[in-house]
Length: 514
Image 1: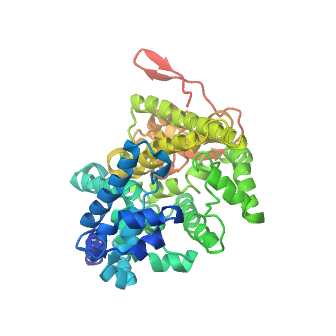
Image 2: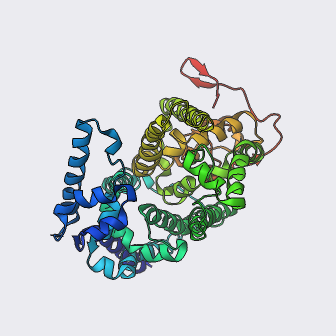
Image 3: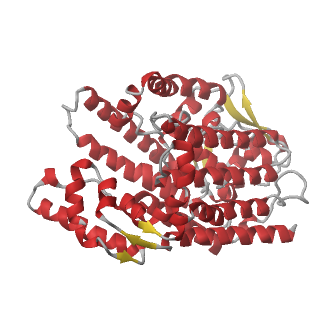
């Protein structure tokens, strides 16, 4: 079994190395026909003229190609801005599609081969490494030395992993042209599913889905014998594969808007943007169903399901962000900060993002129904601010890249506006709670160690106090790792659910309000 794991680890590292090297393979050549095919009609003639110096040249690296493109493109725009000819400035950035079309070499010639040699080997290696895990151990999680692991306890492997993820997300969101070869590699899959070439988001969706599926197998091994964890993991794997990846791509194949039916506003913050509304309204009966379904989830689905099951029905069973956190992020769950200071920051920050999302949506809808007579196109700037700060930097770069530094639920805990909405309902009007049996608690601390949301579960367990917190996602791992069966997830009557015992801090007391 050790040989099998070592083989798997070798294949995974080899696949990751090839994946990292692929963007640098081949050459880049641009001609006028590529520019015409790639750019919008309104920009076509100008772009052909701007990039004339790049024709009939061969670039041996994407850095040289992208650098020269940027130099010519930005020089044109800057000259117009200096003359205040704002209506002639080209605001669209064609760096990614031009870099992709200009790429020549082994990846363009054999995309499926490189897909197998990179992502394929990484998936195969990951499975070979995971399957023998916990084979000789009895079911249940014990004190397994996670704080002595270089990968799981902010050691050098964890730092390298986190840095790699952060760099990848920065490139994905703001410099996708450097991923052009990787996107070419998945073009054949995109053609099959959606009938068109891949974008950087298709590449990301594929990697995201495979990460959940492969690490979901690890969850089966780690929590074997625990039916709740098994079913919950199957659920997040199913929803990610079907609703978040396959169905949206198939919708595009039938000329329908890309739509994730399980994504809910305000997490799906662009749901009420003009292009989304127009796309759904103009897509016939199915488009109207998308719109009505999304609104019903917001105003009816969330309150009802959260009342009966707490926020776990979404955050731990359906959500893609939660799915990645519970599978890929599971090895880092113990790194969540349990301090009171962290809790205070969490409350203000996550609810602040919710307020920001609500205000942005109100302004957007008001402007939309007034036919942009209120703020004109200024709402685009508001969308850009939210998209950059929250949708990209917080949810992506920090939310996932910081797994090895701050635990697996950084985004869910500190930034997700939907988690805040669900949490408010769960805290004040829900049947869900985690009950405790203080007489059985031996204060081992496993529950607090493994709580990904930074809740000091042991504090409640020692006192036999129900755990009712707006941040709790009901993952149930605290119950799974308890050696005495002290903790139990329940959906009981509301009466007796909340205990007003205060948290004692020094000589002061603090009421639990979230």
